[in-house]
Length: 606
Image (cartoon, rainbow, N blue to C red; front, side):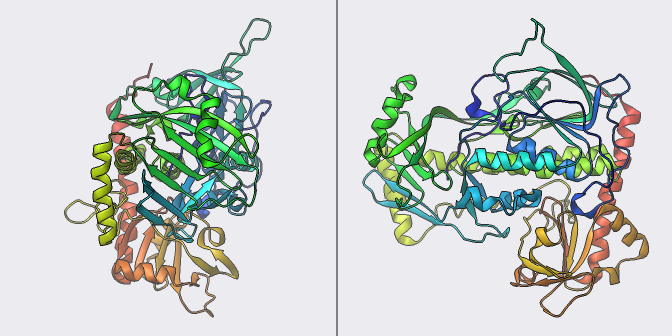
């Protein structure tokens, strides 16, 4: 399933590859939060947040996020919802109005819904339904059927319109207390020290500086941490010492976004991959009312000539599309690459989204991976800022996400190798193999490893490896809880949760219960009894959670805020040890961080 890069090309002017898109917001100084702050996961509201003005008179935040595309917006909303003061810096004063990414999966749909977009998602997305691969002769090589309801409670794959998603995310960011969206300000310098990061920003028109009377106005911002969500040409990454690893995959494609005038025109299959060595082609939905075509530039062809509007219409003519029955919304050339940063954290600086990685679009995991980055990092920053964990917890961000990300990249490169084959003889061998697999009922993707976390903050076995089901993605189903019915996140909320076949409170001592309350760890009993109405009772309406517990062979599962499992307990008597293991990891991170501070000072980054 194809998509395009979504993150900011911070060092260039090509807005097709940027992680930005928000409306103009006048910068009138920091927002001051009064009254209670909504908190994700039921944790205690944040205390000790940086004030609105720093000791040097600079605007002060807990976290600064550079780049206001889907990844940056998600990061800001999640931190703001947890009670932290966030500055979201974006160099473009206007939103980018055209599509880039077009697909997200069930896991990302769950994350977006948890931000407050549950009701909005159906307005700009639709289930992918199917994805068929054909060779140049029209023979079906592979057909994937996607579930209407995936493991996370949302359609397995979804096609969407990115500008509408970003508009919904930005609106939510403005509704989130403590989040300042700073549009038209470009990050130009930064320096970190033992206590935080100083970021200099200057007025920007996006692709050029804004001068007033020949002078460019700048501001100084201060935060404890900075997250670079600023795209493939990341400014934040340029201030880090990390290097980029390159998989060596590179192909140029012409991407066309089209608005067919015939609203009732049916494209079957809805999503098609033409593996024709004469012209590899992708045809997919671009969200409701939109279609996307992608054509590979063949060896020896001029990319500049191939990317013209005239050539776009020539290619679309084979699909019975012309200016009389369609609007060419966008045509642009992309170079698909497979690259990732070796380190995503350096002191108080972090990378997320395309700033940390880029991949071919063939698995539809580019934007998805960036949203996962945000979901993984934000709850860890929250715990560290609250003093419930030490800074060494933040080292698990690179460990967990980098390995997980490599799976997505390898899948994308594997699919790209099949799709981008331009040698007729090699393509014929590929067709023979895939047609034989299809006749035999063999899945060519079956041998790929599962996409799970394999290291990090997970319950360890005696061999030091994650103890199953630790690292697996948790499920989501419909529940009833305290009189409310719906998907788990919308009814109960997000955050740490212990899901058990019996009330977990009965096996935990008072000290542990107090710690769970402070952490925001919900203690819940999963039941199929429709009459159950106790304070911890979650009625599992469709059997989703009871089936999951049974498949795992566990009576209790401890869920992290990013929906991955910390671990499980085979018997309720083992649940205290499961909770204790999480507590021990977080307490140990506090001790390790104190030792690091005592042994060495943080060196400023250039």
